Image (tube, rainbow, N blue to C red; front, side, top):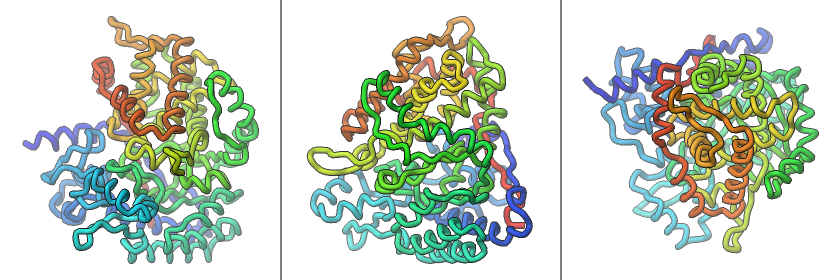
Length: 520
């Protein structure tokens, strides 16, 4: 018996299924346009497999899997033969996962990459670009733009978006789709990112392109292709618009308790509440996100802004099937359903807002750079921890229909849900950092007899603000050494954490989405 495979099967069976039907999000008259966007998302999925998929080609591995339907579903869910809930351990007979996936040559190390840039500083920007693949050519490292590395699929994707724009009735959305179709062919997304941030009033929305760098565990530089089709919830969005208008004054209030300034401009934050319709690429890899904040281009964020999209139906599914069960099992003071869901939803909103706050472009050793480039492979986990902690600070300070004691109970009680994804995942590692940091600060304790968490309201509030300030300081300085020390100290599975994870072993780890009728 393959013990790794059976262990992976057991974890896979602890995922609660959540079904999403794309046809429920569009009228029959608009189905032709929607179907093109769904097809575009599937092309993005193929691009993602080429970036982050296994070697040999995943089609060959699927053939080896044969008629084992569960194993096939596991393979597609994990986007390869590596268990994303178990530190990417292989559950098929393949080589260990390479940190750089297929963004870099398999034999490339961080030292060689740094040396290449040091020896040819004129190439730094193209080598560190999120939209280039690093390859060897005659033993020399070269950087190849995505549109040249994946020409056939990129052109196919561009054509689908162009055709969809011709069928789109909403003028702004039509313009965005047409511009994104052109930008895909050059890997310069400034124009279409700017249009997307400014979208307003389109019932159906779409993000498509290379965005997040979560898959690049080698250097944290290379973006993966992803696509998310979602339907706006206008009523819910309008209820949260006041948060946007009050953000500048809210951040000023937070700064007083935080003890440091927060870089923010009110016009840069645009919040949307929506329901997920379909996803492809990185957005469909294993753990489905409850929200996202895009674009990630520092220039667009500084000059135009960004959008934070909260996926309400995904949050509801995760709360009903996972989070509420964990809170009832872990907390000394279990919360009622409505309060607990309200706190999770509020924190998710402020988490996404927090991604647009804080430093983006910085100066390190007299040279202009970005937080991402300075913190390299540690950027994603620290950015998620910052957004969580700073989001909690914002929610506690806003105080809109929030009981601080109950909110902090919910906040701490939700740590274990992402931790169970694995500490090598950005959100899992970020929550391990928060759990261990707050435990170190005596913000809560674990009862020896019951194993339940007792939250100290005063200390937990102080610890959350202290954690946010610490991470912001690391980011502002671009302090890679400090980031390494911090992550090494807190991004670990402590005995206390291990005991709690065992305690909730019967609760579903997360959800997996089953998309229905997307191409019918």
